[in-house]
Amino acid sequence: MRELQQNTYYHLFHKGINKGQVFWSEDDYKTFLEKYFYYLYPVAETFSYCLLGNHVHFLIRIRNEKEQKSYFGYLKSNFPPKSFHELVYENFKLYSASHQVGHLINSYTKYINSKYRRSGSLFGGNFKRKPIESEEYLLNLVVYIHRNPVHHSLTKDFQSYPFSSYGSLLSNNSATFIERAKVLELFGGIDNFVAANMRGVRGFLDDDEF
Image (cartoon, rainbow, N blue to C red):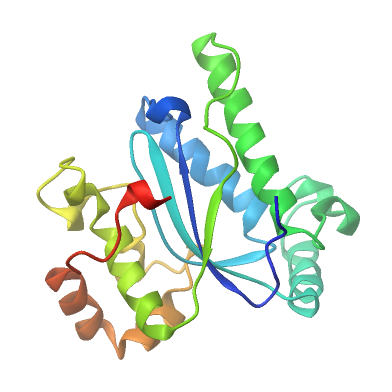
């Protein structure tokens, strides 16, 4: 698997094995996000995400080495020692965000296998990734990810779907791993962000292409 490159934006996408379920309860969704924060936050900025019953979407930017080292210092100063890999720099494996994605999937799979007394893989193959090369594509992808629950007929109202970043991007709560200020700036403000998400994007992507 090719390494995720520093300073690059990616659409990360992963399906359950044979398109099977990867989440069965609200706690499963919450646990996945907790593990995502633990493994990915130190190495990547997150611009949007959506967790669905059998797959996940993330729009991220890989932090460069200078940013990662600086962020490690922040974590060490502001969190207890057991919070992030016991706050040992080498344990982050910051030179390879791809490793952190693998750790996330392995850790969540172990959680599910233990909880539901199953064995074997949970997700099919490696995380799919697509580099993002234009701002227009990035903006469309944010909207596509937020509206994905409607696309898959899980709800008629993407705004109330609890397992996407849409609500966090509109919230005043500062406790979020989403790059709220950067996303809203890209859209030219909160009103434009809401309007773009309400309009949607027709024919932008088909999940099967991943």
